Image (cartoon, rainbow, N blue to C red; front, side, top):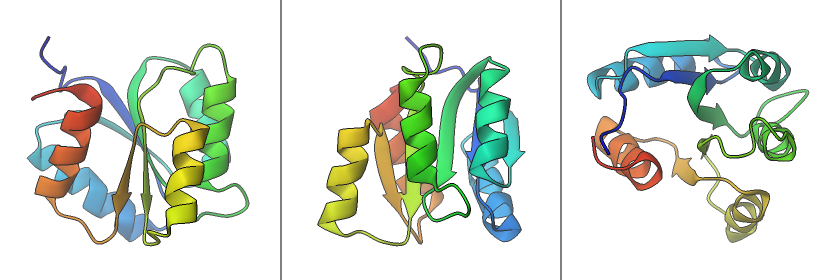
Length: 128
């Protein structure tokens, strides 16, 4: 089944420049419906409004991290199966293992390119 490039994608980062970069990369990959949240708490509220097909969240945010957001999403019956990609500058084995145990769909290490993003998203969503 083809990936719906019109699906609602939520991108979460507390750094406005990173939101712009990620939005631009997603547009290059032909995603059209992109919503932004500047913190995990707002992201969770937005997700609970429904209709999203993918979340891409930064890990390091305050007061709630992307990892904690992932845990909240996985604990929510309505959101549990939502594809969730964490983005981080840290690639320690402990972090990767923790994210996998928490149910992350995939993991992207900064800095990354549109090609890297596409490869990670294909592994989560399928070919597009």
